[in-house]
Amino acid sequence: MNRALIVGASAAGLAAAETLRREGYEGTITLVGDEPYDPYDRPPLSKQVLAGEWPPERVRLRTSEELGGVELRLGTPATALDTINRVVLLRDGTTLPYDGLVIATGVRPRRLASASADTGTGTGTGTPHVLRTLDDALRLQARLTRGRRLIVVGAGFLGAEVAAVARKLGVEVIMLEPAAVPLAHAVGEDVGRVLTEAHREHGVDLRCGVSVTETREGGVRLADGTEIEADDVLVAIGSVPNTEWLAGSGLTLDSGVVCDEYCAAAPGVYAAGDVARWHNPLFGTPMRIEHRTNAAEQGMAAARNLLSPDAPKPFAPVPYFWSDQYDMKVQAFGHLREHDEVAVADGSLADRRFIAAYRKGNRLVGALGVGMPPKAIRQWRQSIAVSAGWDDAVRPSSA
Image 1 (cartoon, one colour):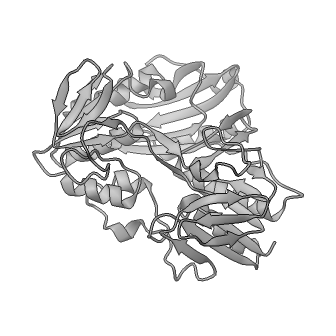
Image 2 (cartoon, one colour; image 1 turned 180 degrees about the horizontal axis):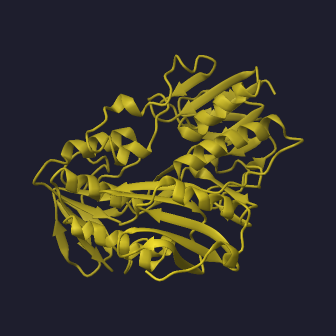
Image 3 (cartoon, rainbow, N blue to C red; image 1 turned 90 degrees about the horizontal axis):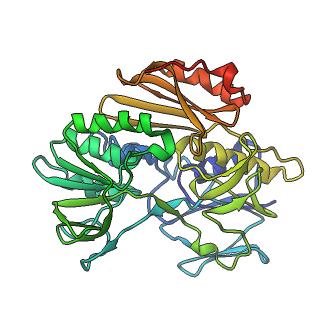
């Protein structure tokens, strides 16, 4: 392999590029990104950047100079992949040949229908915000001034983090969530209620069981016809994998780029990060994970397997994610979705200081901690990694 091409210049793509060099690869590396910026970190966008605590340059992961051994093609998204001739076409008409390819194009925010003739750029009243890029964060940050009103559509982790920052800045927040209990599908109803109550205690007007059908000039419209006014609206209702450019490539696309346990999507083609849907042999199920730690780890794994196609290693991580909301530090290991049971293994839900364990079948598959020392939650990772039995790993206690 003499020509390595990585499409996607965020955490996963950057990790892949740097891993190739660390592993001794001496050929060319081209890193393609649709944004005009050097690779940067996304988790601080909904926290420190949105709060105005960090300047934009602080989220940069590497400068162009620090990536001197990598050719950067920034601000020019890929538009097509030809796996037969092994070339990628860019929007500017450039054709990039490759011997090995890593796809790391991530996701984009899911949007709502809009009754106003807006562009979706979040520049003022009538144009709903989303939060994925640095530009998104800076546009919303400029609008979050004391006394304004923000509607957050969606009470998942992203919406919750934005709500927490907005309240800290003195913004009135209305958070609208279609589920009866936010995050119940992911963390369980009891844990979801704990996280929900924290928002209400901090003055968020959280309305559950409410469906938003469209954004409009100066607010949103609900399914029952009710209209709610606000200065700004943030839509945080999930994401869509960036795979449209791969149509006709021959790759299998199903809620992401479908890969095997080695992150391989086709001969010489691997995927990593938010866009990759791969088989995780540790849990025996396909996964597509939108978390920062996984992006970096999978980028490294994809690069190593690209270099060693005859002796690949399965990518079988214990997923990890975290979230900061008010004074709560939420940390989790494992695969919490589709669990069969949740049990409080340490601490108390009432005190908002606990570790919840998650069961699937007869094994421990996840653990989530709120307000606990990092060491307390990290020790659960090993039990999950060795597929510990539920009865051996957990001694449930009531909270």
